[in-house]
Image (tube, rainbow, N blue to C red; front, side, top):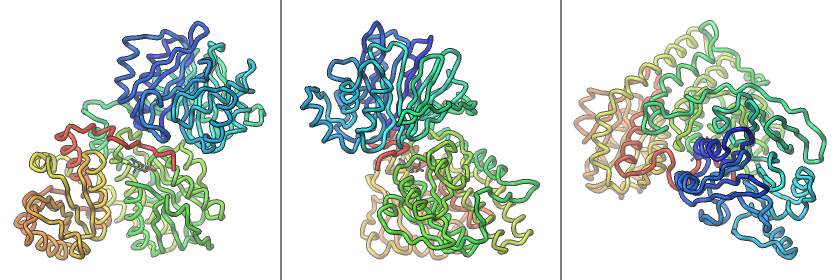
Length: 606
Ligand code: G6P
């Protein structure tokens, strides 16, 4: 959690750092702060609440300096107050630190440091770091940082500036991401690539167990035990445009609209000469007979669909595990097992821990990630990239539909490796996948007015139920999650056939019940479930085929969706109006759709 940024160069540091924080605020946004070194002193600016509060403070009290570090916070230890917000200072104010992660032994260290005379200002675990460094500092910043790290338990990425080192930032990584960006006579530091733009042209991903010590011209890397490491930069491939809102009012809205092009890019990336390419995962898919999906949140919903695809197409036994549960079990490692870690960010701590547990048991792991430079990608035996481009809105949209498509294509690849997919079947499946691109574009256009109209009517509904069967059960879960996440409406997703076993007691004249009813094998069963809700006077919204009279007769509102040629792929289309619905309800309730309260995009703490 939290975003870190740093800058040294010829530009005014606070201006560069505010833009960097803007790009990192998806990692946390409950408070923000900055420390700039100038004239042998550290100048601190902090503000609780959204980043604009910090910008306003800096505008009122500018600090013109060329070297600084900054932070946007998602609170773990201590409330999101100005005092708890980073950077944190040593007692003499000569050392400032920003940190992402958790220092697990902070209480012991705090007691020890207090005994040595350190005065603590905040309730955070982070504050032990500047105090610890200051007790060990004798003019050599790297030596002090290395000695401090030897005392820290837990995971971290942190950056330090020293009042007497006007042109130097020292940063260290153990478990949380940290990148150094190189521009022309300027050097940047950040938790993620977009925050390095547009100043840096090259990036270096700091490895776990490494320290970076840099000025505007040069970076030196060493391991925690002091051994020098050659820095390896590579060109930055994303453009500043990819991380802007374009013509949209929010990243979420932009990312929803990008889905057709994302799906096309993904499908094309998995094909060569019209056939599915053999994925380069370092394992023989024909030998896989048991797959475990690990994921959290939206990625877990995609995993539920992955299970359907693999069971149906490749006849492989699949388990779907919530990462935070898997990591504390004692999973069985048998030959032929494959773990697939699904994560948009590739940084989710629980999924990463599950991956490490699997690897410790010698189970091969494939990462299905959007961020190919992420920790999960680097620690997996093989990687399947989502190709969705940067997803900035906290609520995942384009990464979700890309995950579903990627899992479908993966299931086809496994089926083919096992001799269960003939060439004509493969060709038909590719045609079906490609058709989704056009259907997605049409669905987004055609559902917009009915969705906005229903959002007008149900803006004040304080609860909503989503029902679906088969492949649309995950759609119901995901539709409910979107509404909870960004509109703060209590919502549940339920398998429609199970609804009568209890939750149907919730139905009143006020309750909107959103039923996902495509023309698939479950259609008739869903109509019966709709009748059950109707008989109890619930307000019915259906997601279904335009012009379906039976549906229209039973529904107060219909969100039209195109029908996928292959039922397995229908959930990619069915979720689209529900993403737009959550967006519209949130806007009408004056919610910040890109930065919902209490959430962060990548949860790098347990
Ligand atoms: C956070 C986000 C969710 C996301 C989940 C998993 O909780 O708020 O929107 O689905 O993390 O993220 P991942 O990057 O692992 O897919």
